[in-house]
Amino acid sequence: MSGPSQYKTPRLSEAQRLAWLRLIRSENVGPATFRDLFNHAGSAERALELLPRLSSQGGKKSYRLCSIEDAERELEAHDRFGARLVALGEAEYPQHLKHIDAPPPLLSVMGGTALSHAKTIAIVGARNASLSGRKLAGMFAHELGANGFVLASGLARGIDTAAHEASLRTGTVAVFAGGIDVLYPPENNRLLAAIFENGGTAISEMPFGWKPRGRDFPRRNRLISGVSLGVIVIEAAKKSGSLHTARYALEQNREIFAVPGSPLDPRSEGANGLIRQGATLVTSTADILDEFSGRIGPAPNLQPSLLEHTAERLAAPVEPGDNLRTEILSALGPTPLDMDEIIRFTGAETRAIHVILLELELAGRLERHRGNKISLLM
Picture 1 (cartoon, one colour):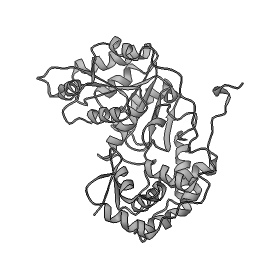
Picture 2 (spheres, rainbow, N blue to C red):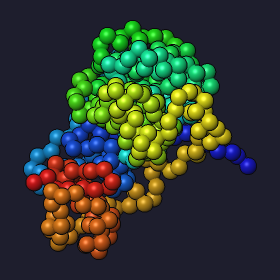
Picture 3 (tube, rainbow, N blue to C red):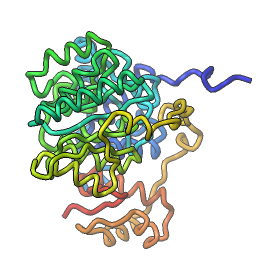
Picture 4 (cartoon, rainbow, N blue to C red):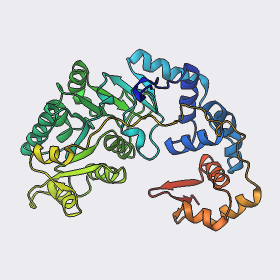
């Protein structure tokens, strides 16, 4: 009997890759909406055909669909830069990232194959880190690398930089907040070159050429925790972005480790707070290795994914009625509601409800919140 390893991993054709890129770059389409559209239409190609009508049903008079020309230009820009677009479900896609809620359908990837390593762990912390904080980050990164772990971080100043530098020879993944060609901060250009020279990897879910804004860094942090088995927090202030990474780690069922610090140092307030909330207190690499001892197995077999067309997906899309649209609009408001509440309230078929919510989202009238909640933009 053939084992799972003998099955060929699916891969997008060039036409499919172009369609996926057009879909994720179209107006009001994020990772969650991408999957909803795919499940509704059966393929990215069919979803692109339906987008204008769906957004019109949601109340939008005109819709910006990513053109073939724009998508081709982005693909060509990746090629010229030495980067590539990897699809959810393809062999190079991060093993752990594909299991989070609404993973990015496409990732810009540059560099080696560290990205596909099963034993990946993240280290994050303060940009204005103390000397001892940087030394700790380097120690953890170096010793974890010696024990077979690849290190993931955000290539920021301080803790991130120290962690990347210490894991160059054992494997490191830099996660960008902007496009794969937009380095931030720019002074880390030598570090990034060293990452590539040692077979490390850089990734981004943002469009090529995208300059990062403040709101893009939480999305970056979601990827840092998503590619990892756990997150180590060293020196994080009370409102640090590192705490966002820890929150995403919690939602993604990842391990959260925190290094305690002086209560007199504001840079330790966040990490100390995580420990009070139940994060694992760590003072040495052994604490982390003990936590993972015997728990890291082979990557799960690839389940039917967006790369595989099923009979259900190729069936005719659901067409909800106007009465149900009116009922759902009356139920929604600016206060976030759980999806299950809407399903119970209407008593309608779940797929029909999802189509109407998809219409509203494409029209820019719906906002998604954590915990499977949604609200209407008034």
